[in-house]
Amino acid sequence: THWKHGSIVGVFGYGGGVIGRYSDMQDKYPSIAHFHTMRVNQPASKFYSSDYLRCICDLWEYRGSGMMNMHGSTGDMVFIGTFTEQLEPIFYELGHVLQQDLGGSGSNLRTPSCCIGKARCEYACIDTQDMCYELTHYYQDELHRPAFPYKFKFKFNGCPTGVWAALPEQHVLRGPENNFHRQKHSGLIGES
Image (cartoon, rainbow, N blue to C red):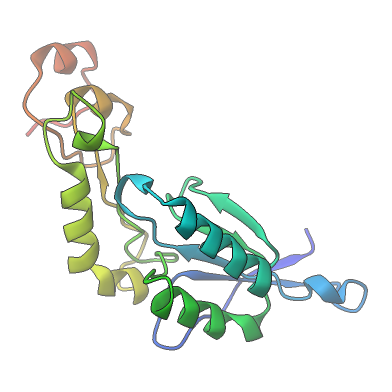
């Protein structure tokens, strides 16, 4: 690979949200000498208006490469490819124009995420969106100032049938007890 990963770049006051990437072939390809990635915190259940999506795409087209990953494995919107000089202006526009914040990266709390919950699912037993929203705001500082030896995540499932996909080592917050589910998928859900 021709990318140097994990460099120290970021926005003032934040320790997360920006993944630094520099090319080792800057002389040959100056337009991608810097190709930093930014993680942007998504709204609960990833509901967007078309106006918001247009604004976010216009911002990234203007300040970055225009390439985005909408909710990859991190759950965040991932803005791929920008120069160091653009990081602060992007951060300012995200926060002051779009009322959006950076997501988590590095050894810290990653951006909390949830299923669509009661908004569209008849099987939801808990309000995943409210829990995700409240915990995101409560722990916002941990998203931006790495304090853990490794990444830490909150993910909310609204019904027992969504829990079976959780990895065995993850701590699972789930709705009411479902014995059929527990028997069928024993070993995947830790005992309470």
